[in-house]
Length: 345
Image (cartoon, rainbow, N blue to C red; front, side):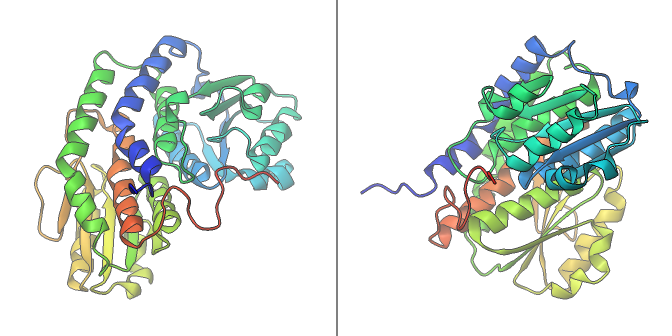
């Protein structure tokens, strides 16, 4: 009987270059001149649950950097039961609700709480156009190419990042779609064997994910992927914060994965070196053309795609690493323990 464990997850991870192309084409044709301008608001509030809460953290830092508008990310549950703490009537707020299914109970309540303030400045991002969230929100972007059959989010997450990037950048430059598509295919082809090798190494039993700025949200997301798919010990931290206590957990069975940032790389590289001295193994993901001392493994995103359009590239190979670890442990990454695809209360 052929192996069926993980079939959906593997397909969804490796299909991301094609689905990104489809989503970017959809955004260019349907949304280039329809999105609200973040600079017209006093504040942006972004919300989601689980993976989409981590997406919200990335999005908040990205939009704050690109627009200069104060932006916060909150779990949908906080807006449901304490919305008046965060939603102030004297501020002009752009509200962004993110949910893969568009059916997450807390996110529906969070959007409802915002709409009850009398504002209609709300944008939903979901993969399902007939979902309750898409129908409730005044504006709804539906990244249907990100739809999934597996429980753990992979391509849905990365595809829902593209509307946020467009919101911050305001337009998709000429040749960007083809550049993203070709670079993503080459990136996966070049490094997926290494990702599989690392993921199947069961001598590693502790995973630490590091990131600064917007990349901290993505570090949190891959931390969750490792927990969900492979039931492994994993944590996420800012690079320099890792020295303030958490590095006490580093040993020869540890892998430290850092999402590097061009602007702060000179501060990040010494952290890799320090963790290597403690016996940990290190993996860097970012725009690094040559592997420096202190880094054992490197996934170089390359220079062909501008930095603000490169954020989704940080995810697929680490998702694949988590998938391989799950398979090597005899688990089913399509159906993680104790989880369902949609949380409805």
